Amino acid sequence: DTGVSQDPRHKITKRGQNVTFRCDPISEHNRLYWYRQTLGQGPEFLTYFQNEAQLEKSRLLSDRFSAERPKGSFSTLEIQRTEQGDSAMYLCASSPVPGTGYTFGSGTRLTVV
Amino acid sequence: KQEVTQIPAALSVPEGENLVLNCSFTDSAIYNLQWFRQDPGKGLTSLLLIQSSQREQTSGRLNASLDKSSGRSTLYIAASQPGDSATYLCAGGAMAGKSTFGDGTTLTVKP
Image (cartoon, rainbow over all chains, first blue to last red; front, side, top):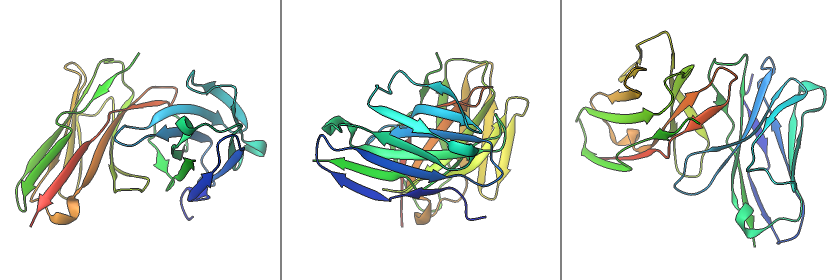
């Protein structure tokens, strides 16, 4: 078990382009979470999955954001028509069951220029 | 809505000192409280998890406590070392699994 993996580690994109990030959770973990963190702030909740079902989506997530977890394994987070305000670290975490604490990946640093 | 506050935002101590980091939360119906360490530009590393039924957890030089009635958690670091320099974040977990994070305390331990 290699922990939670996120790809890519860094992404630089031009404003208006679409980007997609991938997260591979710990294999036996049913819960998968996405958070966003800007400099000097704590992570903010975006969305989470129980297996393949997306159970909650933050109001922070505009309709330009979409997340999927097909077959309850890896997850993707897509941002369409990126804006400079989307520049942040996107963090993925997983847990075996609710309330057992998170294991985080190393994050994807997005820079929109 | 759960709100989590960490004060101070930054702390500098000499090597060898014992120190306490503070975390306050507004909703006492917290399910768990998790402390993390974050190095610059990196992800979060879990340090300690306290379930709502517990009062404290210990790992090596770290001890975390939870007082739901007062809405407070503390992280105690004994005999601090320069390698402990990092940002420490606390997160209050809800039963459904979603967590609310504080903005962290950035610790600098000077040799």
